[in-house]
Length: 206
Image 1 (cartoon, rainbow, N blue to C red):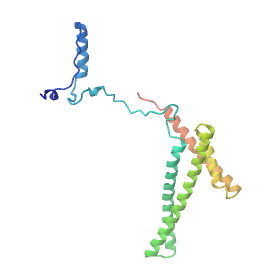
Image 2 (cartoon, one colour):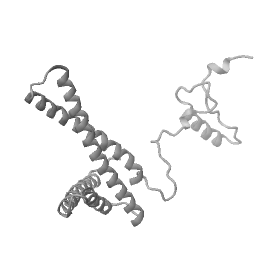
Image 3 (spheres, rainbow, N blue to C red):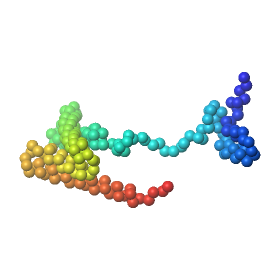
Image 4 (cartoon, rainbow, N blue to C red):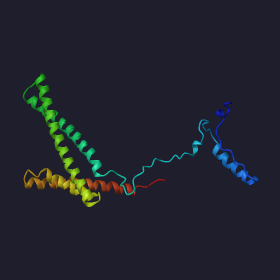
């Protein structure tokens, strides 16, 4: 059997037609598709494949962005890592300060530095992780209770996080923690609103 068909490019041949006009139409259409090199190993014309951007299929009625429950895990993990990094840097500073004040050198100084880094890093990581857990839990409960996820949930969750975190430190500190949570969550919502307005007002080029 001859392998000549492997050396010839694939092209769409015009279908047989009864009259000359139809034949010319098919010939012109086939010439548009057969222009350019096409792989002889394919049994179809690869130019038929759509080259559009990928589209994600969502279930009917589903939100196109992740909810608070899905974001909770990444938020908690990120908060713990950021807390560990900040606490570790603060531990390095405090460790150098303490060892210089005591004139410690050698292995004793390295041991004291490691103790400061581990102690302060773990403490800050636990604090930020606890705040992230409280905020995520309040946000998820509000989303299920209200049936929607908006900026109101963010503000309420931030205020409740501050209140719960300082709930065992007395009424005054509890109120102060709630005010701090309210302020931070409000600033975050204002930032998101400014971003949404900027995206909506920016010109779109087609």
